[in-house]
Image (cartoon, rainbow, N blue to C red):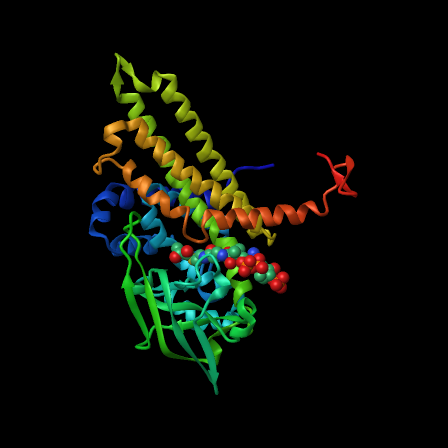
Length: 400
Ligand code: CAA
């Protein structure tokens, strides 16, 4: 078993950490107060080659692995989860296209967005007011009219929507089939694609979420990705990959909480000694460190599985809920260790706590992750042989 990164991954990891130290960490608190898309930083990230990593080389991208994406997300998440979300969001927007579109479609619609001098953005449009956890309940309609589809509906909580040039839209082509009637479309920005309400949030204020209204948006039939009815499976396959990315941002937050709390515990003296020398504090730090380390391993394993073309639904769900719960717990503990200082907005840990909360919610709540994980565990148990049986309800049942 080899836990080391390849040379290429190690260089990317170092580059992403150096980028974070230079452009994100020192400005995170100041930029958050602006409550806007951190354009300057995201443009720098694009120039530094930290975006669009998974786009295949045939479509102008670097064709890197999901492990590489998680390295960038962990490093940038350490500096600011909101900025990390703004930087990584093209991964989510374009993943359904990398999964379901042809190379020609990627070359026509995605390549021009990732190869210019300035970054261009995509937006992943799945969620609606009545289709959040129940993603199959999407009501947005796509109707075929000759050589076109006409799209109507309202999406909400869409990250990077006001910046986006291309919208990856999940819409129903056969509503009577529910989830099986969903299809996915590439919808270029136009007058028929309008930005609605921009949300005000508790944290992650360096990323922007808004409504997107499709008002008779006409797209050529070539904008359909895969076949009609492929939409739900493409959405689920996408999320299996990208949830590892959220877990990576969460790992960055969890690690930052350890580092800030430990720095404070070393220099803060009470009762004539550094507070880190009290077991009450040092044991908290040990648990926090272990959570961050475990989150990292689950995250990289889930990403590695996807890179080997292995189905990773269970493992990406484990990574997503474990890492984001770890981020929340570590941020809360860091605030506690820093006491009154932890609660002040000029220190970084109160922001970590507000930012961490969203990690437990977006890209599938942690309750949905536990449903996905337990569903897989129960399915696997049907073929499990433990070697020890008793009769239960008249049926053969394993006992351990
Ligand atoms: N891969 C491939 N196929 C899959 C799959 C997967 N991971 N998961 C499910 N499917 C298939 C099933 O096999 C099934 O196919 P068949 O009928 O042919 O057998 C079909 O899809 C339906 O599956 P389920 O019955 O399990 O579907 P469900 O309706 O019960 O829902 C769910 C499953 C896991 C709850 C799903 O709806 C879900 O993930 N919900 C959460 C949605 C979500 O994560 N939204 C996030 C939006 S993006 C965001 O937040 C990002 C941001 O802005 C930063």
